[in-house]
Length: 114
Image (cartoon, rainbow, N blue to C red; front, side):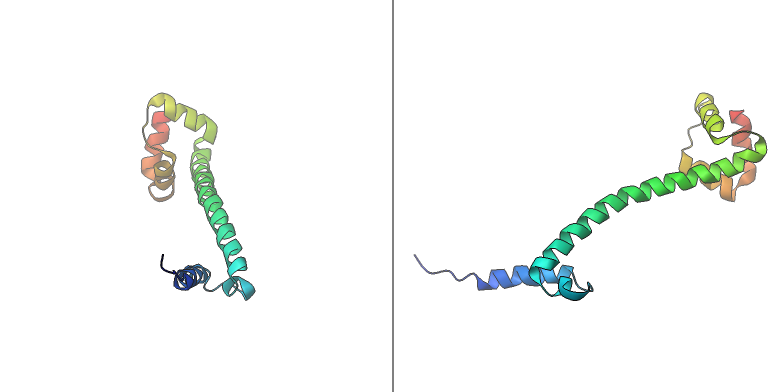
């Protein structure tokens, strides 16, 4: 059996790993073991923060809708329950958009929900 030298593959793997940590500070961008750990941690944070972003936007929509329905004399929770009962198919993102940029249309939705 012929001899196989694997140096090129190992170097390629190392180069790709260090390319992923380009811009990181200190040993994380130059040392393979630290770079490997940095990549794993960055992936874990990215996964978690993608979910946090969804949560943050949902909270923002609640705030916008609540701010728009308070002058109508109703709370967000009561409004949302009435919206479901009235069969309005707009989601929270759309309602927040209406509340912020098209208040006259949003008032009609609130009237439907009352």
